[in-house]
Length: 473
Ligand SMILES: Cc1cc2nc3c(=O)[nH]c(=O)nc-3n(C[C@H](O)[C@H](O)[C@H](O)COP(=O)(O)OP(=O)(O)OC[C@H]3O[C@@H](n4cnc5c(N)ncnc54)[C@H](O)[C@@H]3O)c2cc1C
Image 1: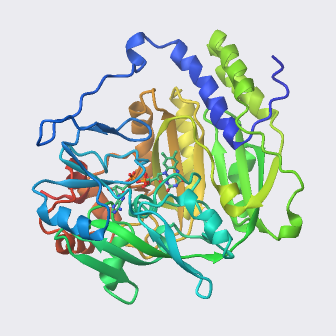
Image 2: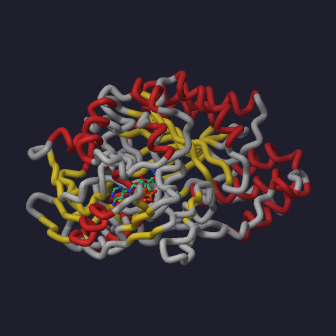
Image 3: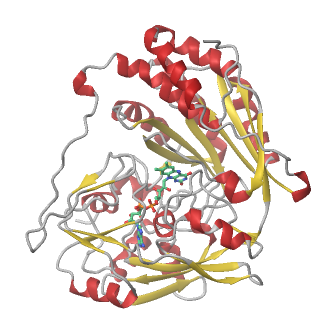
């Protein structure tokens, strides 16, 4: 195989990591490779088995004894009023932390789908809570509008994404939660509640990052903006050059991020900028996931695992610059077909580079067995009580490992580095903090608890993890 010419873009980098992961699997005992398990569900009140639930990456699992799918708000209110046990809402199940698992009632608002009231004057639209981010791009575009920014996938629901402060990258842009202007809930008493900056303002500050503890979000209003095209350029940099230039690249591009490859001397930069229609490329190079190339590469590594770092560096050093253009929602949305687990912390923007440098040094020094790239992004401050970006511009750094690898040792080695840089964990990703540490990180933590108490005094919308991170005893 000719390693001198390997084309590598963001998707390919993930595939490369998969390929290199074969090194690790090759050295594993059978017991370390997770076999599909036959899992039995709990029985419902009529003795029928309820299908067990697992999240996207399969690190969270639960056996609810009831699954409720209300068809409308009236039914939702009734179900909540009647319940005799705890309920956890599920969106698309894309959270890595145990926000959703429950062995009592799991509730899905699967019927709460769709967008309406697209207001081209005020550039707002209403969206039902279980609508997938992917569903709004085209209908908004057809009315001349778009979301302000997007995360790197679009398969979450609005209700789930807002609950955890889901974000993309770009120093001028806040999280998806920061674009919400009005929210509608059914609270833990089965009552309909509305909040916005003008009405129930305190609740609004709690609601826009609610980790599913204030009740069920039924729909919301989102501030959009004029539609725009994007140009994405990705290119490999020398690691030190990338770290040195990160802040100036952040300030000169609309959306800038980096993928740092553990044990490598290179880092991938991705700059995404708004362009006029006239600058769209005639044909956009989208090299896909280069599955064939990387399958071959993985076989090479499998036979020479001790050459892992050399091969990765060699591959990275020959990456070509790539460019693609298109409508914003087409450029933002990536397909993630490799299952992984993820820990993400947001540190104050000014500490981002130092924090990433220390993480990469630690991985090298401790020879941590990981090849999966780390993601590095910038996000604007907001005023949402439980947002990791509350009153500070943030740099979000994510560590990943393949879903069938033990991520715990790797994350345990890195998490204290995030603490050192005053990091706040992503609510939907893996972390080990409890209410004691979280309350020290969020100045409005107690105000959030008071809002939760008012919305759900019977503590219906909780589980063990929620009790632990909020200190509900
Ligand atoms: C491949 C992948 C890529 C990702 N990329 C990003 C990224 O770029 N940026 C980022 O910030 N995050 C990212 N995430 C994390 C993800 O965006 C969040 O975990 C998000 O919360 C998942 O949304 P969901 O619809 O799957 O919700 P779920 O994971 O199902 O639920 C999340 C929370 O929302 C609550 N909830 C769901 N629906 C409702 C409702 N109707 N009312 C009230 N509460 C509700 C749940 O109870 C739970 O507490 C990624 C995750 C994956 C798997």
